[in-house]
Length: 205
Image (cartoon, rainbow, N blue to C red; front, side, top):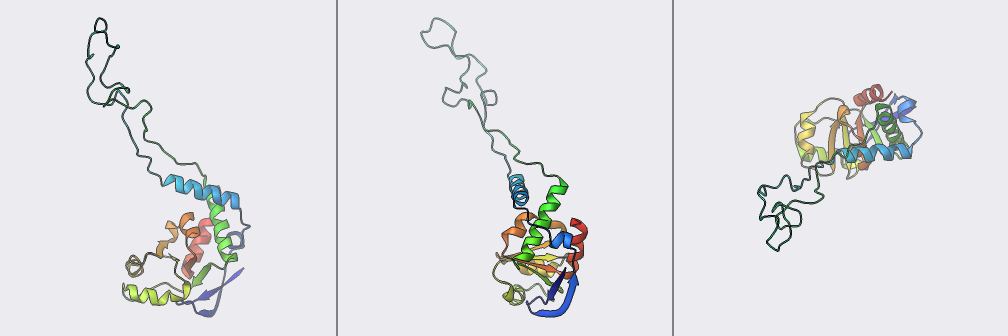
């Protein structure tokens, strides 16, 4: 299939590029995309919550009183969970929420996302994404025709674009190697540099 190439300001050009149907014309697999997106979100959870059980609480090494003859209940430590200042009975511990997703599933989900973005006309190919200077005002002017929620996909690192976009909450700048499913589905418009298309095809084919 062929895609139209636009300028960075959103104006159409006469240029068209050929793209692989295996990447940009794939049938949408909603269940697979949901699984990969959920797994990606789960992998970002830190899981670093922690509480102390009776063994981890400081103190309590001595029996508070003798076993018999005091009239009080038996006690072996002052750090028992039923004592004030004692450990937790079922403490929260470090947990990994990561889910296994193999490469074939991940690439299949990414192909489905790219193809669906094409069908919904949310993906735009531009000839280049570049700025002469790292000025946010210049970037805002050039992205005026793409809406208020934009993901810019660059073929190579561009410091001027990155510096100009970091003050804009509605613009995210990524290279092809940094693309993730959350960024693709989370932005209303995905603007891809023409030189990045071949890298995406090489990655997902």
